[in-house]
Length: 317
Image 1 (cartoon, one colour):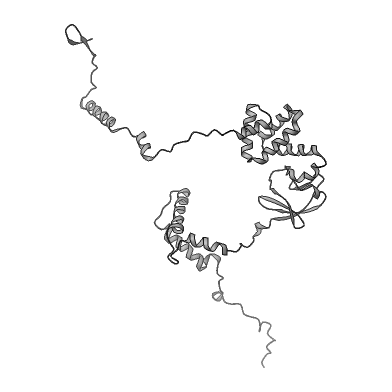
Image 2 (cartoon, rainbow, N blue to C red):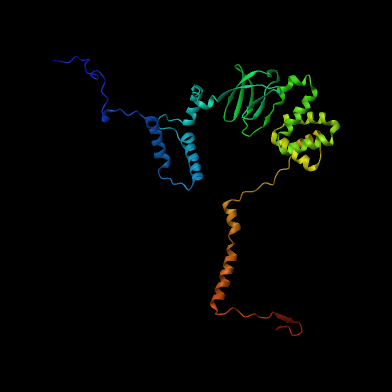
């Protein structure tokens, strides 16, 4: 008697393939396009070359890349790859977003000082947002803050603790009602630039207390007009000269810089001429050495001769 097909519990179940019948999925690094590029590098760059260290490898690779991209035309297109790349670049589409493009998501609330807290550090936002909840996108090197879909503030991410990062322009709405607050915020911003700036601003406020407001405002305007390194260099020089005031810092910024003496690079021939003695000196030393080696003992010392004017002859002393 034949058993019905459904009587066997596994009659209609697909049998698992045997081990030899399993299809191996292709790996990303085993595709033909990738393998062709690897073969090209192995056959055209690595073959016949040896490298002293990583720096030598980097230098050789840079020279080879310049040769195959900017000097030698491609065998397939008979054109320079760099020229083709420049022509095709406008047709490129943006790369797909990856995890680092999104950043960590967090919600933060703006306190009474128009600051938000992330990992014990506080970052400023525009003053009209006090009391609101914002969206924070935390990236490896920056922090972006959104009110809804509007970007309201961007800060460099700080990895210390209990650091206060303030952008003075966020408090412009407050400055209209509290002019004194502008001076305090500008002063704190200058102090946070570096220890040198903090020492200079402290001495400036102490020595010119009656003009402190005007001096801080003028110094902040200078800081916004020049690069940070230039400002810090001028503040360091002014602190060294004990000249405190925005006018002195402005004069130092306007003064021409003293250029360091240029170091002349010696060529191989010039370096050789410095290290190797001239041929005449070598021949003289060889002659003396040959004369000294011919005798078993060094030559005896002789007294210099003295000219006798009366007899017209030389005599020893």
